[in-house]
Image 1 (spheres, one colour):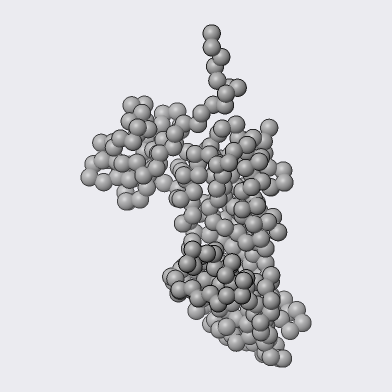
Image 2 (tube, one colour):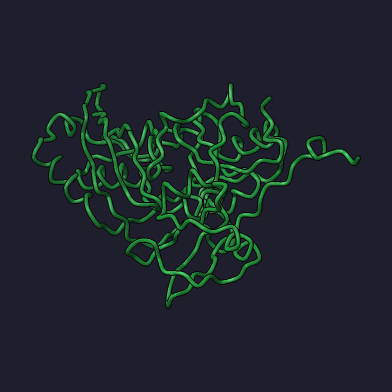
Length: 311
């Protein structure tokens, strides 16, 4: 049985190429038998890899997943630039003859170093950022000029794993570890600009979001939703310290009440509140000897056919 049967949870899906994130959500809605499906972190149709989806009440957890750091494996083609900064766009410039052959290793290493660490990055014009209420990619693909403001991102790793010469191009296989909000297409574009030869992305695979790996993801075509769901508690306890509730506290928290309690671990971030039966009741914020819920997770309702019949 693939349907979620009213259950909430997080799905790890290995997105295939050619589908938008919305396409994946639409398919999972049918498989899960619910309209309450959302995703954390868009992947372009060209990209593959880890997509995290929330089912039913667990869509509330997506807010806490979106900002996690990520890991990608990508191929950057040096020698030409496109209007979308990836292989799906039209070529807008090509490097002069011999420019790629004359690229030195030191120049490449210096350019990569300048794109590593905390940097200011201008998102790709075909990103999903909204401009005057419309997605940037909608405007760009309609031929309108799109200017997006630079934002601060952190690229903690930009590692070249291999390279290949293809005609007048140089393809770099890279591993990228970065903060949320980083555009990998923009890295390819900016590397090409720095080297004066142009660059764009030809392949992209997301392999990790925070502590969650694509190696644990289900294949979309064979997805069994009920069997693949991670419980809200299983996800939250991998992200946050845990506060073990008493039965009475679980009831109070479910009604939105503050708790008189001390934080279970040093720090000031969110804490997962777990009931005695192992259910995630809420995400708490501690301060001043109290804990208030910033998100509550009601218990799943059993489907009608599972409810106890009247005697």
